[in-house]
Length: 230
Image 1 (cartoon, rainbow, N blue to C red):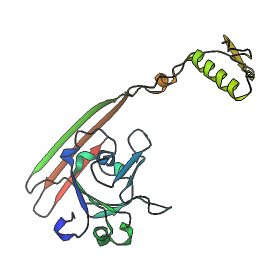
Image 2: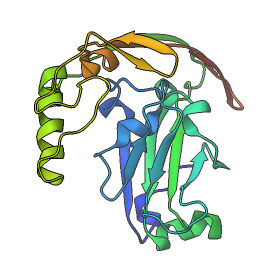
Image 3: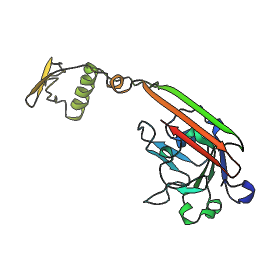
């Protein structure tokens, strides 16, 4: 059950999903970054957003600082992204301070995130299908040194730190200036010397797909909902 601000004495932030519906993400918590004061959301970049970390009141313990999630009245500490899809959520409330979170007991010491899912109205059958395709591109750009530029920097740095002596390199030799070899040997393997732009090799366009199909029905004594998300 969602809490009313009038019933609480502490800090409550409410996020309507229509405000973040266009944010492409595999984990709904990522869409809240920058929208709730004092809430910090981080991700390690894993496809699907599975390893998203959320802190409401900062790092409070060396064991587990994650908040308590309450989904339609059911508490959990599992990864929200693996439980409910963003298209199934009606609104999210964040209880940030101790006085408001205290209604859930000691387990809410790190804050509480209340999630309310969408429900069909009485006598209504609702079918919904959502699909999105997102292209993620690296736009900042990193200008890396090529092989010759890197060799010149390495040579100059070594000479400056070693009384003018020259380094000894399998690729660039050991003269006063680096001479790029055509091949070099490492162990029992001989390889060609390449001029690789590693930023270009690592950062490429990534596609994110999301599909959601839901069926909801409201009756006299309650409602039912079936949702499939890929």
